[in-house]
Length: 401
Picture 1: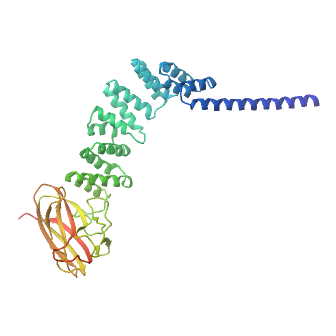
Picture 2: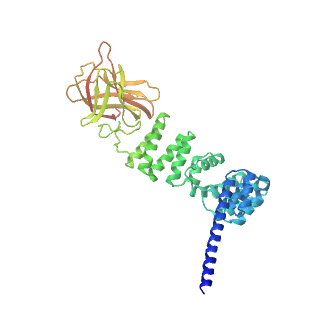
Picture 3: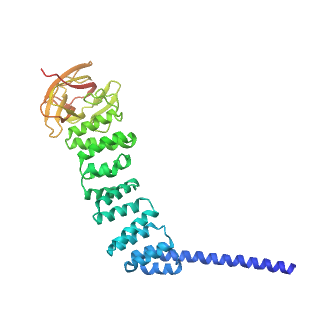
C-alpha cells in the first residue's frame, strides 16, 4: 500500500512538471509569435501565424500587407472572431475596390452590427458618399455624430464637401449637442466663416457652459471686432450679458465705473503696460501713475465701443495729483477700422474730483470705435509725472432736437 501511495505521488509530481513545461512552451510560443508580428512585414507576420494559427489580429494585419490575398485572410480572421469590426470594414473596402458593391455594403453593415461605435458609422458614411447616395450619407453622418471621437473635424470636412451650408450641417448633424456645437464652431472659424460662427456662438451661450465656453466666445467677439462686424459682435456680447456670463450693464463703455477687473476682450478696458505708466483698479476707480519716463504719446486705457449714428455726450469724472494744466491727458475717440481720430476731450487736470462733459457726433451706421484715454505731450512742456484717478465714464446718445 505504501509503495502504491509513493508511486501515485511521483506520478502527480511528474504531471505537474509536464504541465509547467507545456505552459512554459506555450508562453514562449506566444512571445515568439508576438516578436515576429512586431517586425511588421508580410514574411514575419506569416511566420507569426505559423506559430500561432488562431491569432485573428495577425490575419487582419497580413491582409493589409498582402493585398492579393486580402479577402481570404480577412474571412479567416472573421472565422476566428466574428466580432472583429475592423476585419469587416477592411473586407468591405477590399470588395468595393473590386467593384463588388453588394458585398462591400454588407460588410460595412456587418461591422456596425457587431460594433456600434464611431468607426463603423464613419465608414458607412464615407461608403455612401463615394457611391453618391446622399440620403444614406447624411443618415450615417448623423449617426456618426451621435458617437463622436474627441475631434470630429473630418466629419465636418466631408459634410462641407457635400454641401457648404453651415445651417444645413448644423440642422442635420450638430443639433443642440454642446460638444458638437463647440467643434462645429471651431471648424467654421478655421474656414473663416465668421458670420456663421457668430450665429452658432449665440446658440452655444444658450446650451453651453460658462466655465468651458466663455473664453473662446470672448475670442470670437474679438475676431468679429477685428473683422469690423459691429452688429454680430455687439449681439453676441449682449447675449452673454443677458445670460450673466459677463457681468456688465448695458451702458457704454462697459465697466465704465471700473467696478471689476477688465475681461480679456475688446469690449472691456485694455490697460497699457508701458515703461513709466502703471495702471490698476483701485477703490476710487482706475488709478494711473505716470513717472515722467513714459513715451511722449501713449495709450493709458482703451475700449472698443459700438456706436449708432447720432449726437453723444460723455460724462466723466476724475482727479489728478501733481499734474499741471496743459497735462496732455485727454479722452479720444478713434475709428476702429482706420485709426482716424474722430474727436477728443479737453485736457484733464484737477486736484479735486471733477465731473466734465464732452460732446461729439457719429455719422455712419452702427460702427466700432476706440474710446481711448491717452497721454499726448503738449508741445513746449516736459513729460508729466503724477497720478490720475478716473472714477467713471459714461456715453449716452442725446435726443434729436
